[in-house]
Each structure stands twice: as C-alpha cells, then as structure tokens.
Length: 455
Image (tube, rainbow, N blue to C red; front, side, top):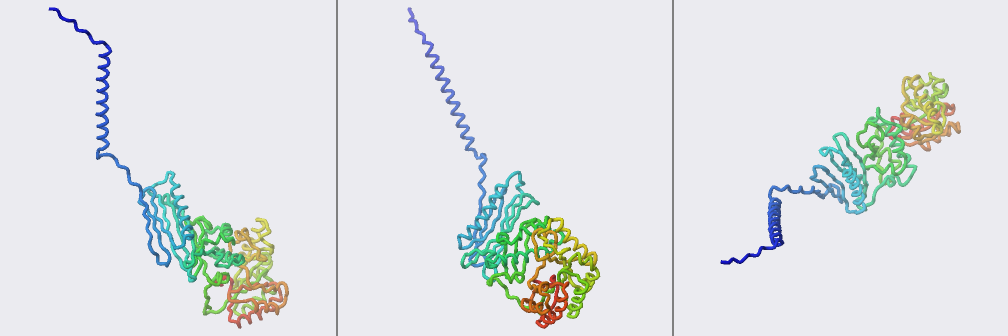
C-alpha cells in the first residue's frame, strides 16, 4: 500500500498562532487585574474625604432698636473663630463694619506659619453704648491669639445716628472747632498724666503724639451719658500694658468744648462755686509775704508756680508758702520760653526747679506751668506733671493797677476758673484783698488747681 506523503505547515503559521495565544493570555491577565482593582476600589474600607469646615452665620435682634447682632462661627479645629458684629438698616454703615471684619479675617488666615493649632483663635465681639442724644457707639474688640501668651488685640469704634444713618465723628462733638479740639486734647492728656493706673509705669514721652490735637487721633471714642471713652493701643503710654488702653473723661470736664447737643447739665454742688487763684514768678520777700497774709485772712488756698532761681535765693519764703498749706508748682528756673531750648537746657530748667523745691520745702511740686504757656511734646516729656494754664488773665504784670486787677476778675471769673496773677508785684499784693472779698461775696470758695474737677 502506498501512503500519500502529508505536506508540512509553513513556519509563519506556527509563529502567528503562537503570537495569538500569547496576546489572548495577556488580555485575560489584564482583565483579571482591572476587575480586582475595581473590586478593591468599591471596598467599604476605602478612606473617605473629610467634609469641609462649615461657617455658621446667624442674625438676631439686639436690645437697641434698628440694630441686629450677626454671629459667625466655624467648626474648623485648625482655624476656629467666633465673630460678632452689629448690623443696621443702612448699607454704608454695614459696609464699614464688614470691611473691618474682613481685615481681621485676612490677618488671621494669613498668620499660619508654624503656629500651635490648639492655641490659635480669632475672637471679635462688641459692646453697644447709647448717648442721651440717641447716637450709638459700637466698641469692637478684636483679638488673634497664636499661643497662650501671644495675643494681638485692638479696640475700634464705629458710630451711627440710628434714625438717619449718619456717622458721628469727634468733629461733630466739638463743632468743627480746632481750638476746642486743642482744649479737648489738653484735658485728655492731663487725665492720662493723673491716671493712678499709670503712676509708676507711664512713659510721658509717649503721650504727646497719640493725643496731638488732630482729628484722626480722636475718632476712636465712645460717648456715654456721663463720659467720653478714648481708646489707645497696647503699649502706647506704658510698656506694661498688655491690651488696649481706655481713658475715661467725664463729660463735665469737656462740657465747655462740646456742641450743644452733647453738653450735659451741670448742677452746682452744695459747696458752691470754686475758683483757683494762682501766682507765678515768686517767691518774693515782700509781695509773697503780704499775699500769704491776705490768703490766710480769707481762709483761702492757692497755687504758687515758683521759679527755681528765686526759690534758691529766697528759701525761707518758699518754706512759708508750703507751711501755709498752699500747692507748690514748677515754673522753670529762669522763665525762658521752653519750646525754644535744646534738650539739655530744657531738662536743667525743669528738673533743677523740681529738685530745689523739694530740697527747700520738703514737699514736691505737684503741677507745672510753662512760662508764657509755651508747651510741646518735649516739654511734656520732661515735666511728667500735669500742665496747668489759665482762663482768667488779670494782666497784673502789664497794668500794675489794683483796680484793673479787680475789674479783670469780675469780668471773666466763673465757676471752675483758674486766675493768673503774679506774686512779685506790689500792685497785686495791694489789690488782692478786694479780689478775695468780691469772689467770696459771689459765693466762691478758694481751692488749689489740683482740687478743681475741671482744669
């Protein structure tokens, strides 16, 4: 039997077949892998993304008509904040408030470099103060804490007339009068110098600039029925201040400078009217002694602003002034215009007088009067004493006439006046008895300038 010979397949068919098998195998493996990965992704054990922190905003009515309280809080443990601010029906006022709030938010969220998240926090709160005029003052306290001891805080005030939406400024209180602003600045400065909280830590050289009579320095205030509260930053007057500083000045002290809508009614105290008699340029061995005798006759106390050079030359007269219970004041050493002196000479003029008064009398000078009333920041920083000027100038140094002395007092003296005279003139000693007799007949009692409540 003959067998037919079978033909062999060509090589390229085997190669193609093998490649097809390998491709199918690879495809199967890839399908299995993708299926497994998809199954894993759908696993309930997958870590879910944390929800974004929520900011909760709530609005509620306040106890003041026309004002709502807006509260913003967040549950973000890394950047927590609690914010409250006022909202009115006036968009302009609301825009000013929101702009200020946004400034603090920006500072807070940008201040995130290596801070302890557990101590970091932003808090903004406010207090509403209403004056008898109907105006609202909103005192906003903002604070960012980045650690238990590192706190950045500030007080800012906003004002509104609720019926009109008008913004109230210091210029409205004193009637756009720059001279009244200057008088207001003096009252505020003296209040700062006399503040018992600053007694041992006050930095006198730091007081002048933030209280300079410029409108921008007197916009941060709140007006109550009894006083004006002025707010300053931490460390402005003393390095030991850990937060904003509040200076409260009774309205009675500012009453003469305020517009009619903001003045308060001042009732006379049972003790009656008061006047402070002051004498400059002494002591003098003749006139001062006679003046002391006249003051004793009327049981009157006065304030003597002494020159250091004359205290040195007439120490026994200065002692008599102190022993009689009168107030001692510093009036420089030689009576120059202090604002024109270089620093060293200025210091010697003031400090030398302080030293000689204490050395001779055993009592310190408690007030200061600059010659010619000339003062500035440097003068204030050197004295560290309340600066006392005057509102009744008798011009006794000019006319040397006892009758004109009395006429000046009659024409200009009112309750709380400070009368300027000089105890180096014979004519003043001659005319003082008539002056005291007249003032006493008008119901005045005689006090030192430090005993006045409005100087």
